[in-house]
Length: 322
Length: 163
Image (cartoon, rainbow over all chains, first blue to last red):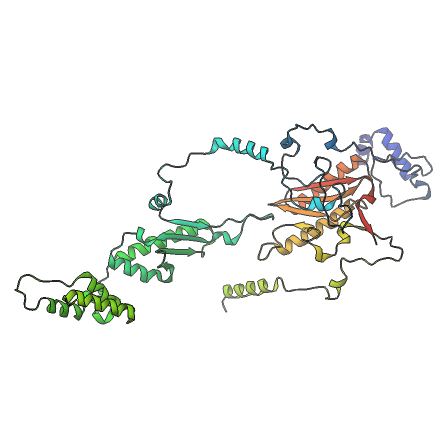
């Protein structure tokens, strides 16, 4: 009861009569405003038929905006951001559509094709120049001493590669953006011969011999930062692990060697003996480095014509037979 | 098989199946999007209708612009369902006023809806409907929605040819 009273007191008098007209007095004349939405009347009786005596007059539409535009207007103010093409605000006689020969291409008005394609009307050269000018205050000069690639490599040896993804979707996440790649020149690490050998064994196929680069790809953590941290951890662990010498490494025999080392082999003893044969006791002649590398190449890379020829040349030279 | 292994296998299967399902008969592909010539040659066609589907990207553009219809991208199914819903909602809300296909373009999380609209109602109603559509769609889809309409005085303007 209270509610009903409140309602009645809220509705102005004119509307209240109108309401009564709909529900109780069907014969009364109604004025239908063209501006109002039609009301769905389910309890329609004969008299409540809305009388649309006259045809709706055509809407009063102003002429297209481009007809009032000045020639030297500021286009950036007309089209400030990305927007679907609108023929009334673009003062260009553009046309789009495929037609057979000798037919006219559809114009810009009522042309859905022009509304489909993305436009760059908001990025005209003067607007870009203005935006660049505004962004300049946030820029800093390029750091000195990092002009060439050699300098950059020297001061920032680790290369960090990852991808960011932009969608036309209501999501900003992409699982692929978590993948992190770290690249580093092996020569940038301070490793001795033993550590280098161990490092290469640990890293396996991640080392590229041609470019002297090691590549570590991490993708097991869900976030990019975590993967980056993990990659840096791996690099640190590899570096320190390869520098440690375990006890059992000293008990390595010649049979355990993975490659031929001239200094540990019979070739060293024999060639030194041959070179020092008949010489007085104190002065010892060492075989030249060229001979050593030739023997090592011959044993490590296998016998081929080139290696055998080099070996022959070095032996002839060492013994002075040429 | 472990639980995570099962999940992995399921994900693998679903990723393989995601593009393989065809729900309409092969025969329909000959018929869909094509219009028959009438004896009196008086059937009006818009530019969109005049070009059958195999001319998409040659003579006419797509009606949905987003990245999820590219290979291997995210939210493919959700995006298609949302677009279908937007089209239904638009043609229902702007009843007998939409003269073209509803064009849906997505930029980041922003949805732009473009269409050709007949000037059949007063501008006051039109402004109301724009706000109504934007408000409801942005509430349902949980992202900003912009209606970029072009109004047309004479509905015959969109007719490209008669067949």
